[in-house]
Length: 376
Image 1 (cartoon, rainbow, N blue to C red):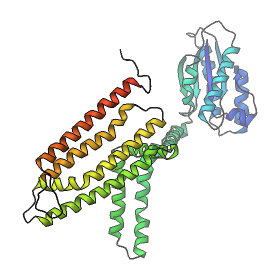
Image 2: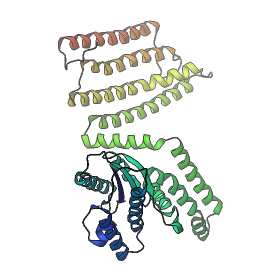
Image 3: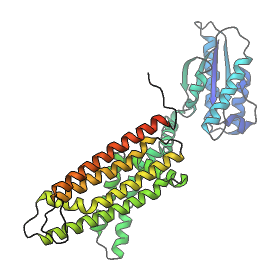
Image 4: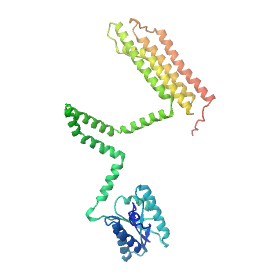
């Protein structure tokens, strides 16, 4: 059986005529088309209904078509496309349930534009579609499709931002230059500023940095809402690193003032590290303890997580000893390390790292904090 299905996505038929839908049968569909044409002669759905009757008559007159033919009109709802598609699906189910035939039903869909054709997947999920006929008034060929396409493009936030924002910036150039001239601001400066903003925006979109920024904002918001300890410890760690940078620079200036010769690159690096490493280590310990605390509060704590602050201290001891050994001994207020003190520092840092690893590995095996996933 062939079912000629006239689709009215926004329910012009029901709203403007008061008829109950779905409408099934040639005579009933014709009466509905006349009623809609009387209520609103300019409505394009009038053409859909009459085209459905035309297809119905043509199929019945075709000698090669040896199947039963029926025509029906289904409508959606005005507003949301999702609700409209769901309403059309329900009406198609009612039409199919009312057809008294033992044959398989196939559909010939009649629409008035691209917007109504968005319901095709809903129809196809219920009945096979043999063909789709779009009815458009000749004087307005493709106008509705163009309008619908533009509407869909402008409704997409990504496309809207890509097209409309640069266009808006370009349109604002003339008024900005005019306003700037009233305040004796050179027009070239305004054009340069707008060009720079447009260039940054284009580069930003081209590199896809908006996703990175959105993810960062979401993470910061989650941290604020969840009350994570890392928020405080990261701020404290950043402050400690700034202080460490100043301390390293101050020690470098002290060494440079106390040594008459030009400092070599290793000495400059050693002075910066020696002056800043204690503060950097304090920042690392602070941030790692905050992270461990959050893992414990989230029930994800593992004993091995406690290795982090000990590793930071061990690395700091090694770097402090090496940088102190490299520093020149002639500068006032600067005490360089001897070879023995260097050996002690290296040994202490190494033993601290190894000892912490062993201790927490044993603690992990003796006092497991959670069931480890099995592998295999």
